[in-house]
Image 1 (tube, one colour):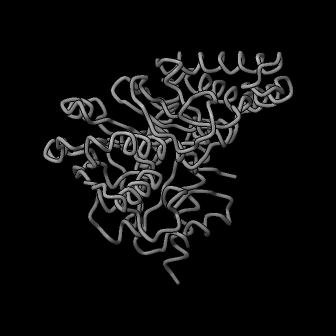
Image 2 (cartoon, rainbow, N blue to C red):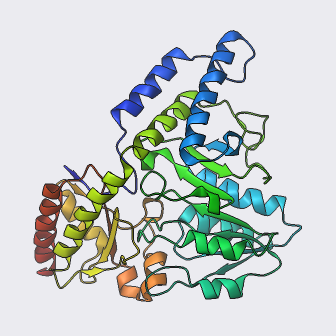
Image 3 (spheres, rainbow, N blue to C red):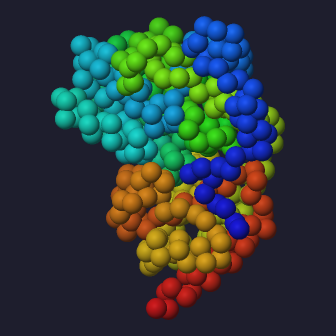
Length: 374
């Protein structure tokens, strides 16, 4: 099997799974309970929280555990907008965002909020001058992902933050799902950041919203205090412990992993470019882990399933939006309907080998040759 869909989800690291199982068996008490078992569980969560906060260089009380990035994004967007709507109802984002950003914004439009989409340059980066023009006194939220899930384009978060800070009533949220655990990016530039463990070999079902301590949110889930007043529910101790382990392992030798994947990506793109029917959509600002390309002569779903016959697994777009006909992100970048409706994403990792890339290229060319003869 050749797995090239790491940006959708990663396989669970055995050490992470082991931590989850040990925590499940050892700490059976509810961390909110006052008896001895509950107190032991609470101490274990506090230990894991301290480790996560240290790795991310944030405060422990700035971590809100969620079921994943989608919930964290919804909590950030709705939590800010409902809490601070007296300041204004204007929001700014991009068309490159994940569906868990764009769909909550569509919902907020029905409640009287207005949303502007900042343009991107030919390289896929936010047009900073356009962002300056869009900013208003009633802008309460700017939400821009640090890295596009489909194109892998890294945004100038520091420069965006400097623009937003000139408007003290506005908050800056960044979906960092595709960057945390993969590249080095300071959280100090943003007010809120979302991420999920299953993007860096953790277990599905645990994510986090980092929220600066002075910011308040209206919770999505009410029902009493848990690990945070902003998210009720029985604390998921085994998942929290596993998140701490996954994050620590992801940060270990991070620069070496980046260097390895960078070389691998360069080889992949070099091989893809040899086929005249393949158009590369990712830009020079795309992180090493994601390569997006289009083949306009073949339906992406057809090619995806053709590769499956060789046990090669890639994706057409972000997994959460894979049922839509075209990629909004690719269209925002290319302004090309054909390319946006025929885009494919290959996402690699430090586990990927050159042998796997070469096998993928061989079978990709073979599939394209067969499909174009039909």
